[in-house]
Image (cartoon, rainbow, N blue to C red; front, side, top):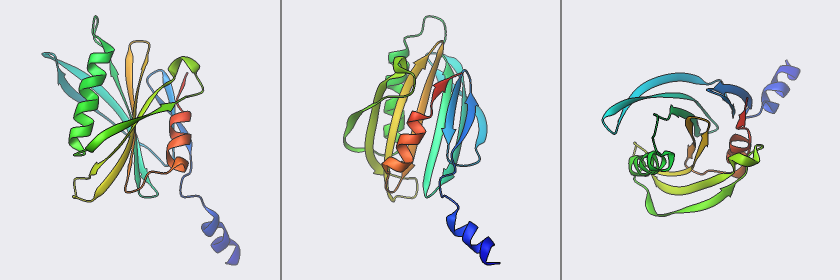
Length: 161
C-alpha cells in the first residue's frame, strides 16, 4: 500500500506524449481529445483539425488548417490571432517572445497575452502560429498562470514528421 501511495505522489502533473496532427508531431501533457470543425473564411469553409487536453489547471491545444490554393498564410494567421485574442478578451498589448522548435525553419514568435476566460476569471495565454507545407498550425496554452514548465516542452515538442 505504501508503494502505491508513493507512486501516486510521484506521478507528474504533466505527463508528456507525442501526438500526430497533419504532417507534424506535437507534444501534449495528457491524453488528447481530437476534433474537427468547419470555419468560414473568405467566402469558403476551411476544415480545422484540433488536438488538445487539460492538465495541471491548463488547456493545451494544437490546431491545423489546410491553406486554400493562393491563400496568404500571414493574412489567415492575422485573422486567427485577432479572433483568439478577442475570444479571451485580451487586455493591453500582447507581448511577442521568440520560440525556437527543434526544426530551425519553424522558428516563430510566441504571443503572451492576459485576459479573461469564459467564466470571467483571469486568464493567461501563450499562442503561436507556424506554417509548414500547405498547413497553418496554431499552438495555445491557456491557464490562470502560464509557466515555462507548461510552455517550453509544448512549443519545443512540435516537429515535422
